[in-house]
Amino acid sequence: MTTPQLTKNQSLVFDVLEKAEGPLSAYTILDKLRDHGFRAPLQVYRALEKLLEYGVVHRLESINSFVACAHPGENCHSHGIVAFAICESCGQVMEFHDHEVDHRLMAWVRGQKFKPEKTTIEIRGLCETCAA
Amino acid sequence: MTTPQLTKNQSLVFDVLEKAEGPLSAYTILDKLRDHGFRAPLQVYRALEKLLEYGVVHRLESINSFVACAHPGENCHSHGIVAFAICESCGQVMEFHDHEVDHRLMAWVRGQKFKPEKTTIEIRGLCETCAA
DNA sequence: ATTGCACACGTTATAGCATAACGCAATTGA
DNA sequence: TCAATTGCGTTATGCTATAACGTGTGCAAT
Image (cartoon, rainbow over all chains, first blue to last red; front, side):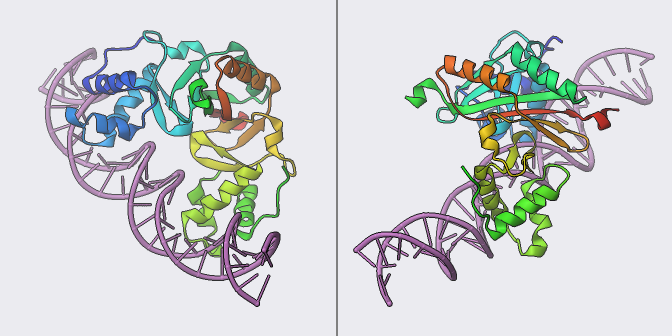
């Protein structure tokens, strides 16, 4: 799937996420876009919904936040399961893919006859800088 | 770490979770305990906090819910990373542990000099029954 | 015994996250 | 032209979680 042209709101939300140092909550995004005419949470959530669908943004379930995909230009949906390491001190996020992990998890669910739709792997802790 | 004697509120919350078919939100638990004198969310959240600490309850980050540990009597903290398969139709949760997955994830974070504190693995989809 | 501490608990209020439901405007394609 | 789709704006509401305050109880140290 290729990413279609973004609408105005989608672009605004995506730009905010791309320029951010780390993940942002929907309400933080809203605040950053008030000068651009945003007034209500739904304007943000609707844009995010599409950006998630296009694979250019990830939702971090464990911290109710959103982050731009670390692979500009590519579509993360094609990389298999994405895992995140989230620094609880500075908020920095690292993203990675491991096919062996994917394989083990998918082998297990297949054994359970479970049909996976969406998988979340999030590791919270301290990054090198903050742990020092 | 061994599980200490539960207080009254902790026991009530734990019993509700154990008897439930699937994961429950804090507010659902609250509603089920109104007859036992529960009036406010904090009564539930405080009990959950302890039960999570004791390792007898898990929080499912992706659905903001809580579930009793599938290993009665044991302490899940000793099993390494716990992964969950959550049916989005019937709510049923399967829990499992895979040391190889642990190992791959921990090897990666170690390479990044990231210090992990808490890891979430949640697979949402359809269980065998609901997928049929 | 009294003091000090830790812990569980109760209550009110508030903060933070997410969506329902309505209507309007622009676009597209039959 | 008409219908269907999509994005957008607004108001209202619901769900999730915690802050801040005070109370009571048990227990250990002096």
